[in-house]
Length: 357
Image (cartoon, rainbow, N blue to C red):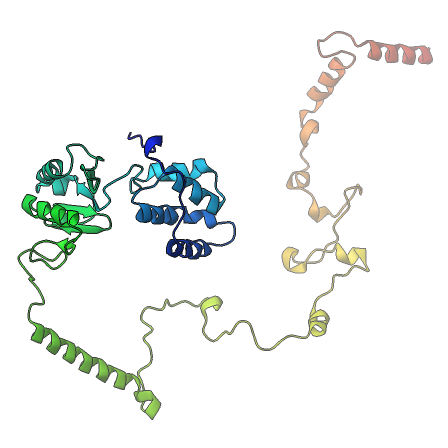
């Protein structure tokens, strides 16, 4: 894991302040965020400070933190996390970032780094003697088709050779940066051998003209119903076929006609709450005829409502045991769970004997 630290105190400036133009830009950038979310502007403000001074100093971090009402440590975390921020002084005229990811490396990025070592400094993040140039190796710069490439500040220079990079470095040293982009006869990321499609400009124009004519005819056909001509109805091929009321096109919901609440109450069926016997009467459609439900407290009821076992006159439950159950009850009477005589039962028995005598 790379550890990024601020520059030594000896090179840190005493203070930092945005110039008039950048201060106005910073105010507009902060105003883009809603109230309470202004801290989201920390990344663009730090980048603007680096563009103004060339690198991000401790004073710049503290100034941005004060502008956004953030603790210093929070802005320091952002500045040390993103490698786009230079935490030490770099070349004032150019800081060359050489891409060292696989596509660029297999196409000669190592030779580009050797050029930087010979023309700027042997080590990364060190300026030349005049302090105008510096360099570093970075990860992918996003133009792998045009490898190898470098980036100087915000501009990229692609399709490089060692000799071409040396010329670019000399141009920055002289204060005359060259045109960025591919350094060969290539249009952005198009094939290096030239266009392989859409090469006939006249054919492109003819096709475009033919397309416009067909589109014009289509527009005329679409406008035909307005002149009284019949138009074909829309296709129903993709519409699901269903008889559900929810998808029935003839049913409009909500209905434009409103029902009278008084009429609804009049048509509603009221429960027979006045007569309890009528309320307890079973539905004839269920049982065939209206029968009075019997209370659980009534001992006798309708014979037709008895359980099937009762119609057969067979003993049910404890009655099915017959005499055996009676004998068992007699034998177990007067004994507890362990089989010993129950004192309470004996007392009751004794009292009854006394009364009898």
